[in-house]
Structures are given as C-alpha cells and as structure tokens.
Amino acid sequence: MSTCDVTRIMSVHRQAVVNIHLIPRNLFEEGYEMRTWMATAGVLCFTAGVLAGGRWQAPVGAQGFSAVMECGATSAAQVRTTLYFGMARPKGSVSELEWQIFLRDEVTKRFPDGLTVWGAEGQWRTPAGSIDHEQAKVLLLVHTDTAAARQLVQGVIEAYRKAFEQESVLWESARVCVAA
Image 1 (cartoon, rainbow, N blue to C red):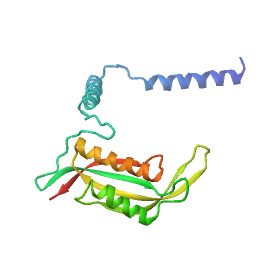
Image 2: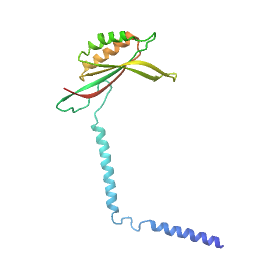
Image 3: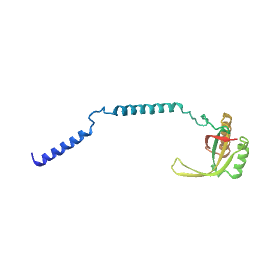
Image 4: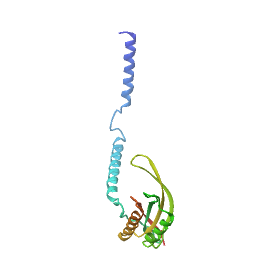
C-alpha cells in the first residue's frame, strides 16, 4: 500500500468514527418516549380538528345560502346584493335617461325602501383573448334573506336583459348586519 492509500483509509475511518458518535447509544434515552407520545397526540388532535371542522362548516350555495350570523341586539341580519349592469348593447349604449327610467320603473317598484347606484368601468377577457372595456352601473340593495326578495332581484335582472339586449348581469350577495 502506498502512503496515499493509507491516508485515505485513515481519513475514511475517522469520518466513520465521528458519524458513529452522532447516533444515540440508546434510542429510548430519557425524554424520547415523552417526545414520541407528544408528537402522536399532536397529530391526533390536528386530525380530529380537521375532520370536525369539515363537518361543522355551514354549506354555502349560490343565490340562496344559509349560515348563522350573530348581529347583536341593535342590528339585524340582512343580505347585501350588488348587481353590475353593462351599459353597452349591440347598437349603441344605454343612455342616462334610459337608465333613470329603468331604475324608477323596474328597481324602485321592487325595492322601495332604498338603494345605492354608482357608475363604474369594467373589463373582461373575450373568448378571442383580448381585453374589452365597458361602462357600467352598479346597484347595491340591502334586503331580507327570503325567496321572495331573491325573486325580486331576478326580476330586475331579467327586465334589464330584455330591455337592453344584455347577455348577463353580474349578481353577488353577502350577509351583512344592519343597524336599526
């Protein structure tokens, strides 16, 4: 054997000796059982929490969800509905006068207790991949969470689509607390 070979063997032997000292002499040394038990209990608690959370979560469905909401003694649970009306149509756009007449005749007669409207500009990706822009009106309503109120909202949407040749009206709803 050459001197280089002996040096390599000793170097490998030293590394092996160092690595052996890193392994605990007794796997069940003091505290090991407790750490194992605590890790197992933690994993079981986490799993139970995930499973229970999945069962306790209230189901949410589009346009008619039900969830328990605590609003307190001085307020009541209501639904905030926001509708987005595009102002462009196949030939021209909906004028301000046409919008005001629609608001008076179709929206206010269904929701006489109040509403809020503001102008907006929307954008979306077309099927061809380009971005289109359109002026819009946003209508905010706060109403009871009943089937009758949802039918009134659907009536507003259908009236707008029919009157102004629209493909759709975006409808979003959320539960809110309303102070008396």
